[in-house]
Image (cartoon, rainbow, N blue to C red; front, side, top):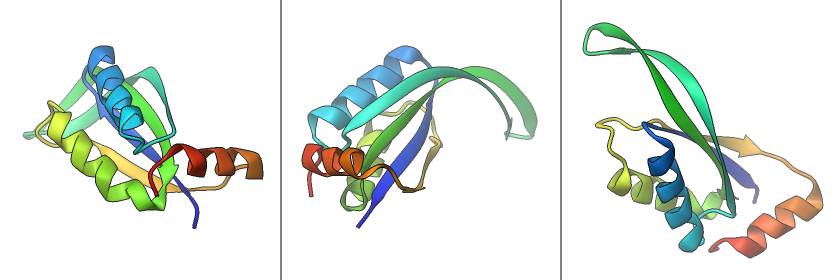
Length: 103
């Protein structure tokens, strides 16, 4: 048992907020932080430089597949960046996450 933090990139603030709101409404994540970033990456043989928006979403392991499925269904990128990693937090915060999401 533990928490997971998702790192998801989006082409716009609007899309980041829309997907985060859907994840929260479904109780797949407890919360999301959204902020602008600059990105540089390989795509179709070129090096691209873009402005993007990132959402950091906190949830439990039980929701990994649900989060991925919902993000893919709503995302406009052909290959969305949906990464996640194990996280630890203070006990009270972890308890709040577990109370806030589906299990």
